[in-house]
Image 1 (cartoon, rainbow, N blue to C red):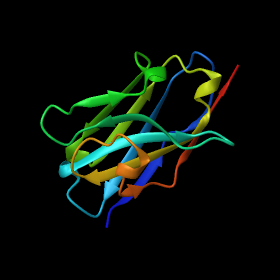
Image 2: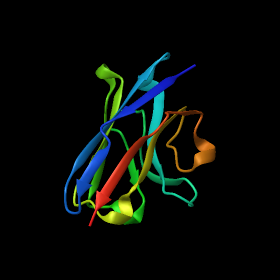
Image 3: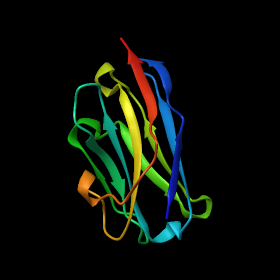
Image 4: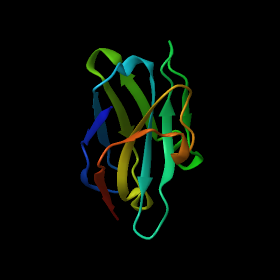
Length: 124
């Protein structure tokens, strides 16, 4: 079993920045692919970014966040981060951390474990 705990959400003005963190516990973090998803009110949960477990850490982003968000991981701290810059009101959502043992996460169905979510609100 893997437990994921997100933090770092909050209220920020458009153009601002936030850094989300997700701490994993319970199993060998280094062998897990990690990802961030988000869900806005009335909408389905959507993929935001992912990072692989193997050396170098291949990353993947949804088009709407490319150039603004950066996913990274620190295996020594069992933590994955999402640095969010140039935030827009449309980035407002609950952000969820996800994990799975194996390849890069691309969809919600790829994910084995989920955190409880952290709210990000971007005001205009």
